[in-house]
Structures are given as C-alpha cells and as structure tokens.
Length: 300
Length: 222
Image (tube, rainbow over all chains, first blue to last red; front, side, top):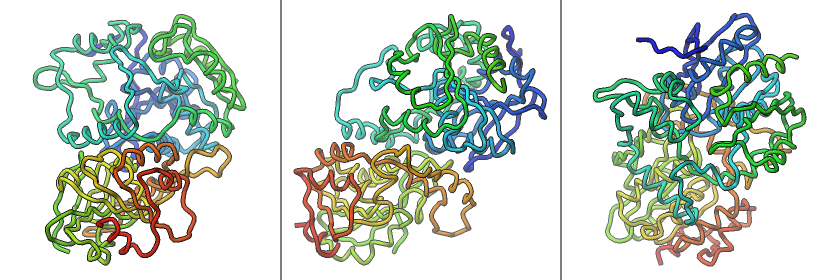
C-alpha cells in the first residue's frame, strides 16, 4: 500500500549523484528546463520530507531535493562532517551545471548558507528555514542532561563509542506506529498523520519490524567547533538570504531574537519572514505558507 | 617491516606496525599528514623498548575513509584502538600526528604516560579559528577534484585526506587536553609554531626540549 498524505506528491524523477565516492539520492519535481531550486533537509530527516512543499514550488522551478549522505536513500559513509556535507551540496550544484537557488531547513539551512558563502558563482538566492545554529547552550531535547565534564573527558567518551562503533545498529521497532510515537516525543508539533507518511520513507522493513534508514553514525562527531564561529563567515554571502522562522518556539527553534539578530547582522543582503503557527519544522507544518514565501521572494 | 596487525576502527581497517620488539614500555608513533608508519624506522632505535607505528586512516596500509570525512578526532580514534591493543604506551607524533597525540594523551591519561610532540606536515591545521576575511580555502573542492580510485597495491595516501588541513585548532581546546595529559615534551627548533602548540607549551605538564628527535625520545623514556 502506498501511503498518502493530503498535498504530498511523490517525486517525478529520482537519480543518483556521486560525491566524494558517496552516491547521493536526488529527487526532482517540475520542468527540467525551469530554473533549479535545490532543497536540503535537516538532521535525521530526508528529502521526502519535502513531498508537500516541493510540488508547490515545482510550478515555477526544477525542484531538486537531496538525501544527505547517511540519510534517506543515499549511501552511508564511514564518517560524517560538516565540510563533506557542503561538498555533497556543491557536487549536486556542479551536476546541475547552472546556478541554482538553495532552500534548506535546520542543519540543511545552515549548510545551504555556508555553500552560498563558499560558491558565490553557483548560488543565486538562499532561503534558510530556521537553520541558524544552536545557542551556546545547545539544543535541549526532552531527556537532555547538561554534561559539565571537561572537553577531554567528553572526548574519552567519544573514543569509547568509536571503539564500539563497528557494532552500532538501530534496534527494529515493531511497527510504523512505534516509530511515530518515538519521533513525536522529539517533535510533538508534527501530527501523527504526517509522521506516518514521513517516517514510512525514513525507515525500512526488516525482520521483526522497521528500522531507521539513517546511519546511526551520522550524528555525534567531535571537534573544537564553537557557536561564535557560525555567523561571521556570512559576511561573505553575495546571494540574498531570506531568513525564515516559525512563530511558535519549540525545542529546536527559533533562537532568542537578540541572538538571532546578532547572527543575521552579518548577512549583507538580508530579508526576514515569520511563518505564523509553525514551530521549527516550518515547511512540514505550513507547506503552503512556506511555498508562498518562496514563490514571492525568489526571482522577484 | 613485517606484516602489520590489522585493527578495526569503526568501518575502517587500521594497520599497526611493530617496528621494534622487546620488553618494557611501548612507544606508539603517529606519523605526519601524508606520512606512514615507515617514516619512524630511523627513530625507532632511539627508544629502549618496543616500538609500534600506526598508519592513520587514508595513509599507508590502512583503509580509506569512505566519503572522505577525515578529522583529527577521527584519527585520534585510530590511535585509540591501537592504544587499546597495546594497553599502555608512550606516544610520539609528528605534525598532524603531534596534534592527535595531544588529543589522545589528554583523553587517556591512565594509559598514556607521556607524549613527544614533533613538528611536521599538518601541524597547524587551518589555524586557531575561522577568519572571515581570509582567502577561502575550499579543501573539499580540491579533494573532490583530486578524487581517484586507489591504484592496486599502492600505498599512496587518499587524496581526500587533504581535508585534514581544514580543521581549526583553538588554543583553549589544546590547553584543556594539555591540562589532563600526564607529561608532554615539545621539540623546539627555532621555527615558528602554531597557537595551539604555544598554549600547550605553557601548560604545567609540558616541557620544551631542543636537540634531535632521538635525544627527545630518550628524554621521554627517562
């Protein structure tokens, strides 16, 4: 049975794009001759999360949604990192062969913004959906406990996990409903109906139930990265940036206005928008409003 | 060199070479960016006990990281699985290997009695922090352009390992690791050193030494 959700349209075309030895799954909607608009999803999500947004954008654009490495139907890698994710987006742009617009959500929004900084000739306009990085205190999902230990002590934990990584695997959930229940604990604003659709494509059937497609190693790197490094590089941004947040604060966003304003002050050509009634998952919660913003702002 | 032991670090196989046998305290050697275990053969005789040298992922006889997400912290994991095999060890590292030796010495003080940090390729990384004004270094683009399959039987480094030149090494991060390490020797030769090195050298657990690398090894053993 093919699952349905009101407004969700499966991709018209799918293909693979190779990047640094990894095959990326790329889904497309719309006229292949139309101006390209590349969509980048967030952590633990996948390109089919754009199934409600993409068909609305496809009336004017060739919409190209990437499964990030280790996510969705893209290959798993041996390790993960921000720079290679940027390389993957850049390689999809290179594959398109013409400058494109970028739209990214959360981590994908931050990466779309960084790609635009680094490849000014390949990126026309950037729409960032609540992807402006964590606060210095970090995200605090349910069950999160502050780790007050020193950096080297936490790094020892990382090394302990690395010693055991070979065996790391998701345990199967008995049913799709169990996945929905699990994800709703992290994202209570997303409806069970949407999650049934979204998580069906986020998981695959195995003996004994369903497992996440995402690579368990895809999160949890270690390094000296600091939140104050996020925004100063945006000074380089030549492309106009539309910074979008939702009106409803949740675990994952938006940043406190003072901090967000401080970061966005680095962007030379900034416009801002707030989607009413949306939390962090702006395009999943309000696909029509998000598409209207994009269609109004891109190539205005 | 005889055939190396093959260790698993996550999904990558790591070659650990025994350069010198013997009893007593083992030395684990960590090569520079673009280097390999054999680079330590000449120095191995300066150590009074057994000497082991690692090929980092993407180097020498070790496997390559599929997808190219190399980082010093990942290589520290390579060194850490070797440390798990050896039990306890002293560390010596050159360039990038010196930075990795610091990370492991600070994370595993119960198993690393001390580390010798030597200059060499990959010592500075991309600097202490991002510089929004600096020329863009898109190492990943160069890596992507350079990408090619490994020639059969080759021990050339993975072209994607150039991504190991793009990480930042803030002094306060280095200092936190130095503060937990048991003993650190830093070899000075008058050449300028990156900010992280100077921060480590200022730590109470660290000591600057001069002379040859072999002399510094003897000092570490003593």
